Image 1 (cartoon, rainbow, N blue to C red):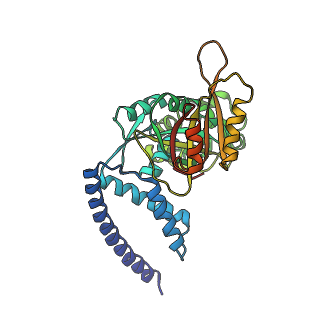
Image 2 (cartoon, rainbow, N blue to C red):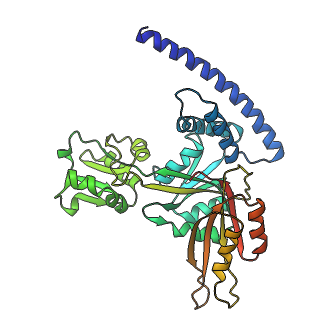
Image 3 (cartoon, rainbow, N blue to C red):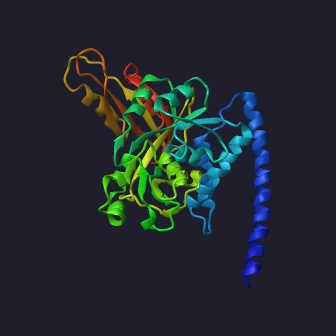
Length: 358
């Protein structure tokens, strides 16, 4: 069999795929019309997980679960836009890692709104200017994003889902050779996370050679305008501004990952069977020692696996009071979780139960 024969087979299969996808979108269109009449939310992370789980179990060929997920997340995004286009706000600028996280769940076709601060993302969702918001919650190298936790405490928005993406930096430039580069633009944290690469290729350069800017997206934009400059930026930023990528994955740690929350208003997920719950806890001071210990022991007695606990200052009066953000395995309507939620109803603010992906 010749290469031309194989290409003809691929063309024939592509024709069949296109036909099937069009049939799927026709069904999706009817689903969207039905949801409009019942005012049902279009984005259902638990339903998408069920589909991917089923297809991954069904697959007997070369398609791995990660490959199936990558393809179908884009199919889901196109489907949602056919059902009902929804605006997505995210912490900008364009080309940021938050932009990348948003596109990984809502696809390239969605209507995006890049905003300058985490506060503005929360306000945009709260006022209805955007249906969902995407904000960073933590990096496994740098820790928690305190501003996101504080706004979750202050607002009535809910966590719809979580997204974790690897933080991969690229070295992008229009220069033909490394010797032609006279400056490198990037954000301070990106320079720090790519220190080994910079020492290997640009060791001994003066400080003026490394120019700090507000974001890696801005670095890519500046590198696009300057043929003797380079940028350390995200892959999506290099692509957005059309700057050729000379080196990829230049970060020091291959394990660098950032987790994001997708937030929404008046949103409740259905149980998926593999859920995580996030709450805020403000314990009543009864004057007895061990208040927090007794609260945590309730989780042990109910067989609930605690994943995370972060403390934040209450900023009330002149005393040192704290509240806590906690995450644990389970859905808020599970019997053992309900037992704790009801027992400590006055101390707990439920932020959401959603599909556990990490």
